Length: 340
Image (cartoon, rainbow, N blue to C red; front, side, top):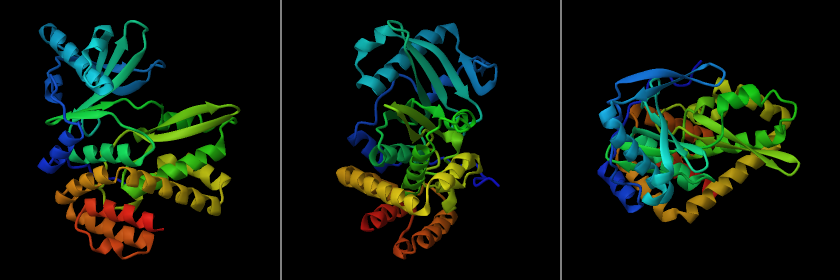
């Protein structure tokens, strides 16, 4: 049974959140908006190297629009990678623009290539939903990874996060005999705990990537979220725990086969300590973000009340009872693990 049954409702960016984005230089004036890219006049399906439909479509624009659109996209990339340094633009070419029609936000993905060395990169242009902004910022502050993104009005520009897509990793890497099972189990436990603490939901394999790192004679893994649409939205606690998505079962089975309950708790405690340490390091920025999150709704009252109850039962505490919205729940979650 799927944990998420209904399409998420988008929430607008509040004035308080907008002020936060300005303060921390996330708000940038862009030469083009998301809605401008919707003016494409044709598209074709995009297939992978094996001839399989990727569910993305490559879009094409009228000849009169192409020069402005491509130059604007290169400038967007410069904002992401170098704070707007225009000197890098002369070596960049836009190779392809794709749209994902089945996603909640119908994101655009831009493939950009450096003509000096043929290296390529991607970045994404989406509708700026408040939930997604909170998710990106919480990832930036509380995870081991930094996130580059910027916002202009109702347009969100995100960097590409490198890694093997979760579903591909499960299909191609998990069955391999040379997989480092214990290292993968440890990383998944930590990823699971981190998602629950900061209430990032819907981490089925299509919404995260796995980075494979070779270190001397061992292989390590890093699991990174790539979709932040379901930040503090659903009311069911298990939505925020990747272990309960049936698509993740092959990795969950590795966890149960290769680590004991005692080791599992040890990894939980390690991750809680690290999240708490990161929160303390960015305490003022985090406080401003969570204060903005607490002043405006980003979910339904029904979802909030259910999650309020389930988190209290999960942690065996009454601390969650004196909360009013999803932002408050994240605050208490962080406060509670810091007390352990």
